Image (cartoon, rainbow over all chains, first blue to last red; front, top):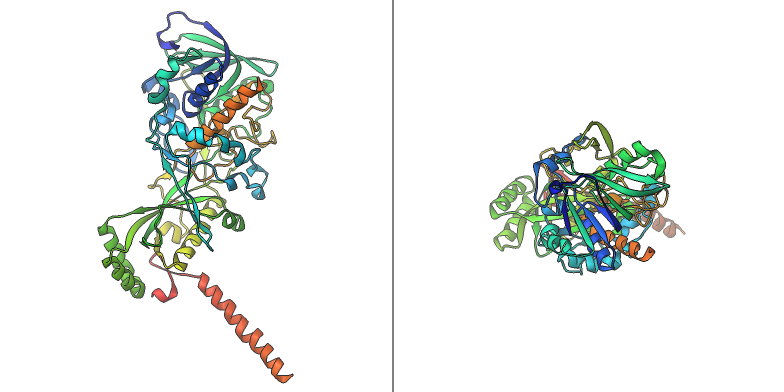
Length: 473
Length: 42
């Protein structure tokens, strides 16, 4: 069933008797809806945008960022049915075992779950994203380096794949142009959601359970707003609320000449043991092949500064045994208390404060990349697999460049999962501390971010939440 | 006895430090124009 609130004539209709109301029709919201309806749940799926992109919806995402240079927030995400899956690139890889074992770095790094808790949902998540379920990682013997495998979704556009199926599903009621403006609540329970269209039509949706799946910034914004309005009526405290926000820094580190018989994979990372011994986080290296002209340029340079290896590489080039590559990295950012979403004095057209994102890369983020390069280079020299030329900002320890990729458009944390309500916002089942029926879905619940792209684990954790909601009743 | 002391001397003051030194150097690399190079590359 479909209700486009913009097309409704009557205001303040009440839609009730849903088992679950889900706010946000992105990867997490749609996955949850599909899964819950499959198990007989009646679901309201509430999307603030339309079926298509509209300026009036997207403008709600315009917001301020402070700290390190970051993308405009209305560019970094999409506000219509399907959410950011409407422009994602399809990179898939899940969390790794060590991502859940960072307790040695401090309490704030501790997940209340392990890889085993989300692994049972990997196969189904891979099927949804249309990628193979096996990832061929290989540990290199006597080395601190491992080869890692990514899969690429076509990429699946959740709107194109699931919209028709959902509006024709008798257990699902899709709402479009339905902006959440307030909640009705009593005794630590949400009892209804107040919605508004862009042309002022209002509606109320009532369900037994509620899930916010609005994205890595909006989940924090709404909870901050409701905490300001209702204090601890259904959110136990705001100590960590909006905090520990994370991204994946993405930067070009330099170029390299590599022996492609020895360095024959595109993606590498450090072994878990090496990360732990060095006290750093996860870092993924990406080796992207350059054209022959670029290789010739690199050979000319290395011949000038290091004739011995230069001549040797030039002779290998004649036999097509080496290539020039761009050397890039995407790495895990430390969950830091000061990286956070706060509420601005400016309000959106529905009277809800806009968010401000304060994002900065900290000392551990720098240490992670520097140590990881050192280990990767050590391995490369040991196997005589090539030579790296690092960019100036790394050699001279300058600030991060501002004309590079910067980050991955991956918004994580803010309503993080932790067993301590002072260090987290949701428990291991994604339920908000202080509430009996409000849950969070999406990458905002990540305790730490790993270095991999978040879509696959978002879908896994959404499937796990669906499983929890089905089994608890 | 003299011979044993001599061996100890050689081991502790010559061979072991040399081994450690070599190991340390092996872990190092030279940086030139941004290139991370082995010493023998130059």
